Image (tube, rainbow, N blue to C red; front, side, top):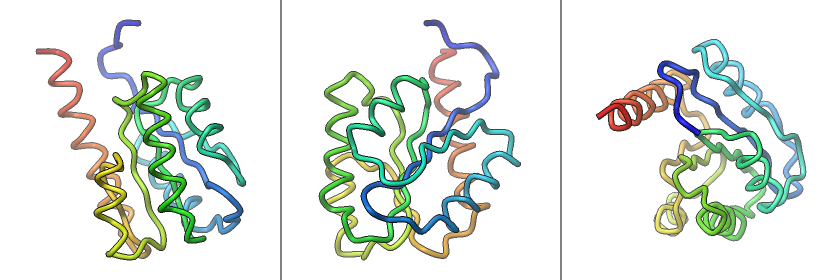
Length: 142
């Protein structure tokens, strides 16, 4: 499939495991939509397998995971691995929520590209995605 110039950035947002806190991910989803991005929310109680399958099926550019339930050291590395194994390792994988600083290097080594901890300004998230998207489109055009 050939990329369409100036197409909207497609973002998949998901909650892994038994985490049912939705305030943060809802606010981020609204901010991304207001910035002109297409946002797909998979819903609650997703497994890494379900999120990887949805990311591929929906042909998204970004996968964003919100976690507050301390399962991130198991589920995020597994999701990153599944995306790579299924040919979707080019998708930008982001995480946010309650992620202790000491866990962040493990997640980054596993393939999480950026971590936004609880309280991150939505403008910073939007700016990060816009800059990443512009760089990706410029590289594809070259």
